[in-house]
Length: 127
Image 1 (cartoon, rainbow, N blue to C red):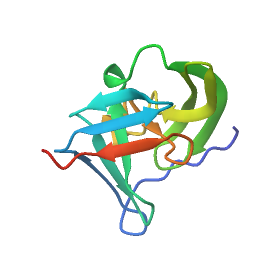
Image 2: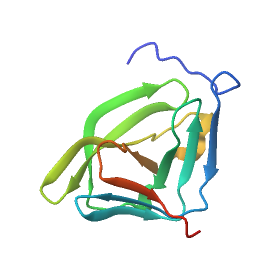
Image 3: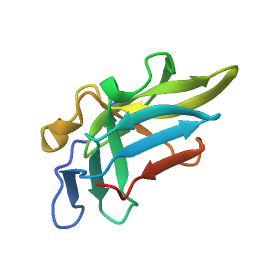
């Protein structure tokens, strides 16, 4: 990744992060792999909201480091994990920003799951 542009969120590309008041659970392969009441909800431009779960609230045995990385000019370098549940490995199903840009600094120590690679992400109504 050379010549990586750094951009600041603003009116043309807003990013809002707020503490979710709801319980958020993530399931795959019949197992709850994350369960938290401390999720952050990121709303970015016209993208669907993404729930970032504290790493401490993810089952410790389900994340395996991946060699894949990507770059977001608004958030920084994303590092990926494979999701391991039983004998199944879902490549690059989870990402995190180890050193997020200042504008999204609260994402540190949180991970997000690709909704189309896992069974479910549930935001519970029972706040």
